[in-house]
Length: 327
Image 1 (spheres, rainbow, N blue to C red):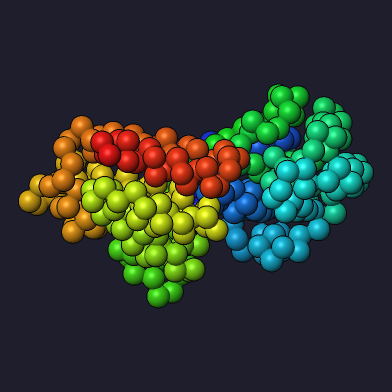
Image 2: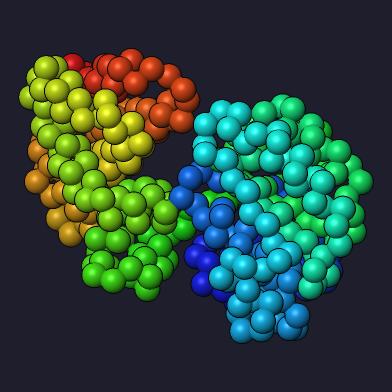
């Protein structure tokens, strides 16, 4: 497959390229990864490569590629759920299954991109299973999901599953600066780093101005922590009541701050960029407490991916941080 502008996941891209070039691309592919990792971007890239008629796919220049890029290719279909549980309705899947028996209009393949497939109900997945068991030779399904665990084992057993991971801060920042005007490299670098290489979330944080706000909240939380002010800590966490999606970002920011306080020296480059806060923590907390706080950040970040009550989650954040800091 021709070198693309898709950032990161080099090994995955190479493997998929080999499957396309060798004519061995699976009839069903599941792309899993958290929101913002580029699942839809990759799905569209693969669809273009599958209909491209040139040797190096996707060439981006042939008529097939141009139609795919514009979203008007007659053999590429895209359906996506709103994102809630069971929001990918069985009626849509039945429509896809019915259409799949019709021969392609222009190329060798008909490609169906099914976004947020993890939002399919059991009945919708079972309806899809019918065509996955005996797919027409020309049909290819590309499903995207935040986690394959939401898909039936019978669906997964008839699919190839790949997982997308975050990119390095350097690569992510370079990508953002190529595609977004007016974004400074260091600003993009910090956003990608704090969001564990998730370019999509980094772009969102830069565009809506939340990044600087959350970083300030995190610094305030650190000050409240060392001053042993439970009320202030809880008050600062109040911003997450309506901004649950920012909690994971905040956990990454806090982890970098605690890590800097643990290992920083006179000439150490700070991952967090928060020299004043790092100095305060370094003077007030011993190494073991900083190590414990780093571990708490990882635990809290995992909790944000579960469907727990937001108020309880905020309370747990305050309690866990205070406990790790010996308060």
